[in-house]
Length: 207
Image (cartoon, rainbow, N blue to C red):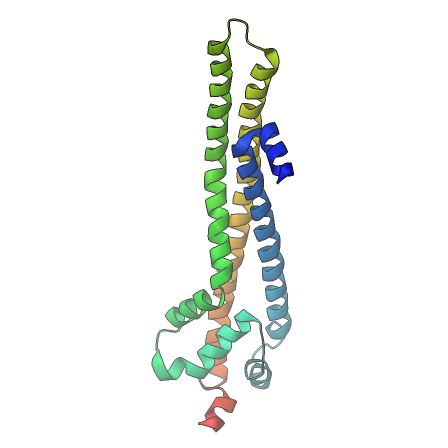
């Protein structure tokens, strides 16, 4: 708590908010970037070398997996013929459900990228208000007070832009990664449905 108060006195309360937002953005970028990288690598390892081998798809889709992309393809294969003829819409629904948390985090990144420069601008205005208040309150303004206000105004602007720019870059990187995953899921779902006669053998035997 004492550290936050010291930091607030150094960069102002809006600066503290920006630092917190920067920490949150860094965590979300690293967490989701690493997660999507691992998901994509595992999915490629499973399916890229299968070609059109039916048994390979059976082994991968009818086993147990925690990979959300593999779960999407497996779910489409097991249930597509029963309740939907629109495979793309079904994949879109399953994709949203399986990647719901990642989509939320990406939305948070977009929000941080939007509000950070606005908070920086607000900090600039607050700093300049402090400067003019000091000028109005004293015939001979203290230089250290003027410098503190100008410092806060400049620093919050830098913080806001410094957080917004890389966060926006990561937002688009992760969004493109998710879009690529969606295309992969659709392509492999079509291929799997054709190869496996729509329903997974394990599911067919159980029914």
